[in-house]
Amino acid sequence: MVSSGEEPIGRRVARWRVRRRMTQQMLADRLGRSKSWVDKVERGVRSLDRYPVIQEVAEVLRVDSLALLGEGRPSPTSAGPPDGVDDIRAALARYDIRRQSASAAETTRHVGHAWLTYQHAQYAQVVRLLPGLLDAARGLRADAPGLLVQAYRITSSVLVKLGEADLGWLAADRAVAAAGGDRVLAASAAVSVGQALRALGRDRLALAVTTAATRRLAPASVHGALLIQGALAAAGCGDAGRSAELVERAAALAAGHGGRDDPHRTSFGPVAVELARVVAAVELGEAGAAVARHERAVGGEAWRGLPAEYRAAYLLDVARAYLMVGDLHGAGRTVVEADGVAPAEVRCRPVARTVLAEVARAHPAPAGVARLTRVIGLTR
Image (cartoon, rainbow, N blue to C red; front, side, top):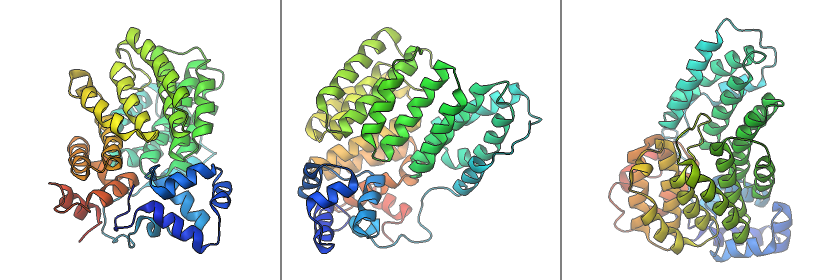
């Protein structure tokens, strides 16, 4: 990954590390990673394009994350995460919820509406819905724990999207607690925990959580989603063998599942497994293989049947692969495609900002990229 300036982000990390009089081993120790990981980042062999990880590196180096990205402070009018995250934070901090007047049937409808709104990537609307939904679901916890688990999972998912992975992890952890002794609910909540930990750059923890949760009895859709999260976490750890093993287990499960029933909103099925192979290759730094496999993975009815947020998020990962192979136009084309599928996925997520900043370096910029950089606030 290269920053919005001409200097690769890895070189910026190296320059700030030297300025702070730190060795690669010292930086690695403070990040809880290996010296090899730091060396690969600085040489550009391993991409540094996950915003939470960039923030973590910036904190250790005692610089603003934008200094590593080579950007100035964003304009106050820039597109970005919708208002309302503080209201969700306040809702998560409330512990004195009394029994609500809303019935279980009404809250069930509201939870279903929130899921659909999220899957259509209408994140601003979901953010507005969540505080009230959390309060209503907690009021019904004794009678309908599944509603509260789902409310926490939606909350975790949208917070991760908006770059609030630490808060997303809290919501996912609450989902596990709300599941109690229900193995299926606990397993579905573990999917959200894995997603949040991966977003935080805690791949080893995500791998441990998701693989442990696969030992629970759960529907194929949940079991498969856990295997996919585990495979992506293993790839994030650089463990290609473990990642491949988990993907193959997911593929075997998907072959018999077919992606039909999905009450837990996992989107698991054969196409999800193929997309996971692509994303795992990106995480492992095998960008060429990821790009080649991507061309074969999309375009069919199964791909078009996935939720908009799922497809757009995947396309951002593919854009990262194009960047890694030096194809800025391919990356730009893919980001513009993601924006066409789900604009909020590109305009609200911090990771999209890092991808667009690099794509914008192409001369001339790919069609649609200049417009998006203006919308997001990277250029004026």
